[in-house]
Amino acid sequence: MSIISMSGVHKWFSTTVHALRGIDLEVATGEVVVIIGPSGSGKSTVLRCMNMLERPTTGTVTFDGMTLTDKGVDIDHARTEMGMVFQSFNLFPHLTVGQNVMLAQRKVRGRSKDEARNMAGQQLARVGIPEKIDAYPRQLSGGQQQRVAIARSLAMEPKMMLFDEPTSALDPEMIKEVLDVMLHLVTEGMTMVVVTHEMGFARAAADRVIFMDEGMIVEQGDPDELFDSPRNDRTKDFFDKIL
Image (cartoon, helix red, strand yellow):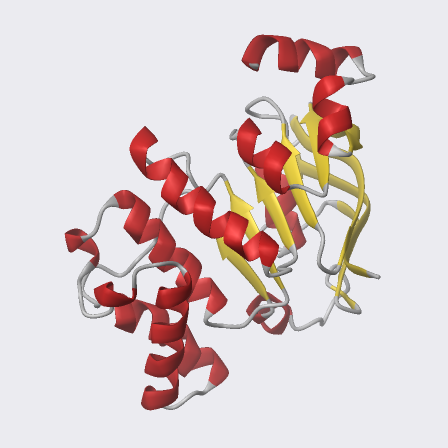
């Protein structure tokens, strides 16, 4: 059963940039979908249209039974069920790690301070850094800060997670620790849509890999089949250059 679907989604920026050109995409509950492709192909725009950070110019987006593109839909409610992790960590520097993870729980979920801190501790343990709960972001490595950002989203107990190139801002030695956390979420059955340039992760973690170019889904399928035997010439050319 699909938890999110996009039908006929186009996105224009001004009158000159046609970022998405007729995206049709469904993600099943528990599925891990990884979106790959060259820079500027529309990968991140797909994610941002899923949670309505960008409103599609035309087409429909449906999440958990709600048509998000309809007028009057409570987008904020939908976003509470759809965690998103960005390239940048977006942590509040004046708050501790624990306070960063607690904030949305208190404001949006209405949890008490004790409930929110307990959940923060659980999710920081889940991403492997429970001892950092009273540290400040400046005291953490980039990889640790990104793991806090993941914990902050998980603390809201979302129905699915969106990851927009979560390792692109990290030094090479820190990438693995974040990918390991994401692989652990895969084993737990979390529904995930991931935009990434990490081909090893795509092959290891995805149920389905989608290759995009020029705002369109060019090819998609089982990761082994797509990597080993791509059918589309544009996909073949992309892999020839990066693998």
